[in-house]
Image (cartoon, rainbow, N blue to C red; front, side, top):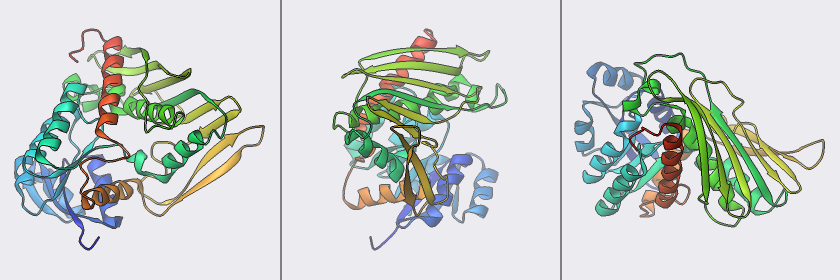
Length: 338
C-alpha cells in the first residue's frame, strides 16, 4: 500500500487510547483527527497522540482528511455513529459490540451496504495469529472431534452507578461488555469444527445476577451447536475469573491461557497448549505487532482491496453474535428492552 489510511477516532476513553497507540506502530494507518463532546478531553488526547481536535462527533465525520473512523463510545452510541459515519462516506471500525441489539446492528450494516463503505465490528482478538492458529487446530482435529468449549471473560470493577458498566442506558453489564467475546469465540471454533467460518447455536440457555441498577453483574450461558458441541461461557463486571478458553475433544484438549488480549499493545509471542497426556505440547505463536496495530492494518488492507466487510468478522457473523447476546440478556432480565 503506497499511502496510509487516515483515521479519525470517535471517543477518548481507554480503548480509544489503545487503538491510537496501535496506529503508531501500524504499517498502513495513521491518526489524523480525534472527536470528543468535551474540548478538554479532545485536546488532552491530541497532546498524547498528535491529531486535529474536533468538539463533537459531527465535526469529526465531516473532516475531509478522515477516511475511516474508529468508534469507541459507550455501547449505546455505536450503531448511531456507525450509521452517521457511513452516511458521510467514511469507512468504519466499530468497537464491540457493534450495537445494543441485533436490529440495531442490522441497521448499521445496511447503512454500510447502502453507502458502499467498509464496516467491521472491532473484535481485535480475531486479527491475531493466535486466534487463526486455534481455528486451524480445530479444523485439523488436533484433539479429535470437538465436544466442549469453555470460555470466560470477567473482571471486578468497583461499583459506581454513574459508570457506563453499571448504567443500563449506556449498555452496561458483563454480557455486552465482555460476554460478547466468549460468544464470538465459541461460535468461531464451533464453525471451524465443521469447516465453516462460524456456527450459530441451536439452543441458548442463560442466567445471571443483576445488581441494583438493573445490569447483569455476572452471568453464565450454555450453548448447544449441531454435531453435539456444547459451550459453557461466563462473563461479568463484578467477578474475577480465570479468563481463558479450553476446548475439549474426543482425544484431548486445548488450553488458551490468554485468548482475548494476548500481549496487548505489544508484539512478541503467545502460547496455545495442546494436551494429549500429562505433558502438553506448547505451540508458540509469534507476532510482530500489538493487537490494535494488527486490527488497524487488517482494516486498511481490506479497504485497499475494495472490500466492504472482513473475512475475519463478517456482517453475518456479527448479526449471529448479536442474536445470541439478545437471547442471553432476555433470559437474565425478561424486562429488558431488546
